[in-house]
Image 1 (cartoon, rainbow, N blue to C red):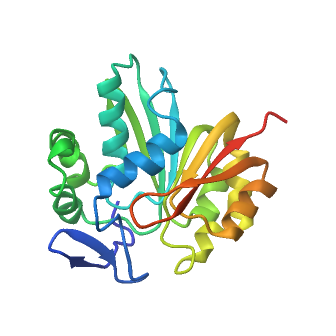
Image 2 (image 1 turned 135 degrees about the vertical axis):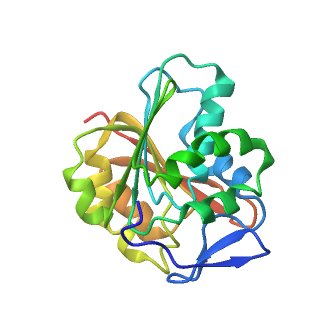
Length: 225
């Protein structure tokens, strides 16, 4: 899990910021609320959850989105397993993950449950209600070799202005290629080139109100053709 560990600085004691991209890993206001607004509600979750539902993610970061999704899965009382695959080039050290999670008491039990896996360097986690895989490396290369299909995408790379490589049209086309018909994607950004890339890849794209200070975010649904 630590092939290319992320270099962090901390803001307000417990908000991690990427030193490479000068961008926080989650909202300075409330990262958990942001995740629920953008990635869960943006993909119409938990309403769409079913056994075997597969979330894929660009940008694992602190793992906050995984914890929020698993918490929503359990709160909804869904039977079976949630499948979750995340693509990350710069994994965060386990101690830094725990420090970031400490900000959110609501998900502390799940954070504590999964912490031993992070400390062990696990890239796969199997629980009675979760099948998780972390794919390390540049998503522009690793996603092309992935053989699964996602029902929902969390597009959570660093800001397109600071890390444009993770938002290019060819990568959005790969996202679409690995999305089930009728599958969805959501992201905090409403950058025009990101929306155009998703539309060109076969998604029906729209803007909707963003979280906190962000005026807009993007949601997308893959057409059946």
